[in-house]
Amino acid sequence: MKGTIDAPVSTIKQKAVKRRHVIAIIHKLAGQIITRLFLITMSLLFLVPLYWMLITALKSTPELTIFPPTFWPLHVQWSNFIQAYTYISFGTYFVNSVIITALVVIGTVLSNLVVAYGFACIRWPGRDQIFYLLIATLFIPLPIAIIPLFDLFASLHWVNTFLPLVVPPFFASAFYVFLLRQFLLQTPYELIEAARIDGASELQILWRVIVPIARPAIAVVAIFAAIGAWNDFTGPLIYLQDDSLRTLAVGLIFFRSTHDIQFNLLMAASLMSVLPVIILFLVFQRFFVRAVTLGSIR
Image 1 (tube, rainbow, N blue to C red):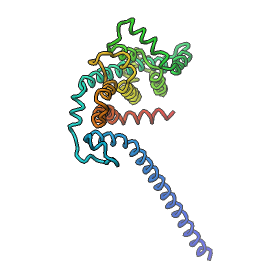
Image 2: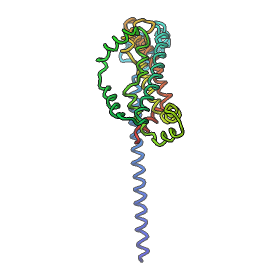
Image 3: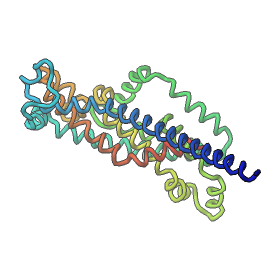
Image 4: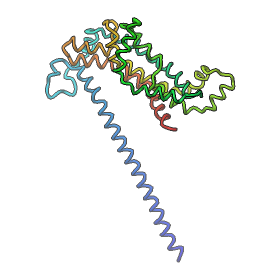
């Protein structure tokens, strides 16, 4: 009699466990679906400006005046990109931007990596205090330093050259030093000590031990530096006076003033200037995500 009663009870418990398991799976799937729908929606919102830039670049001038606006060109005008390229010195501006960006990235990575290594992997008196002083420089507004820097570069006869834009990155930046230092602090100190015991110099440790570990963080710094240099407007506007030295960011502004704001040509030129940054991010995206993920785990 007792066995007969226990059997239905155990069956009921098994059904309850299965029901709870099914409900948990449904809740998990619902959460994943809602999360993905939210991410897709936000991604589409961020892609809307790029889409609108593309269709505007492909429209003819009369079509730009149509209301309500068309969501795809009635007649695709690929020639707008050729006109935007030829109406301004796009090739010259592009080469100037590439040269400045490349030198800025090289200087930023080399200088900030060395300084961050000194603050993170070498123990010396007053290290943390000097680091805090370096971080305090982040609170200095850029407009305060513009005039003194211009006077300095003018006295060095660097105005109207690339030097004011490419030399300062070789002297490190507080933000990038902070970013790399926080990443390097996760490196086991025993690993560095073992390399020193084996007779490796600090530069050898930096190159053979730290650099392979810090590649994701270095990639993030390189991406930030490249985007900042490519989109920099204030620096080239102040220091570069000849048209042959202008960058794309400054050249597009002069394009607007020269061509009576032909929005289709302006969007074509803007799209061509944005594409390198998008390609750069897509190529190094895995390093960027990995650095953010590793940097959040302590």
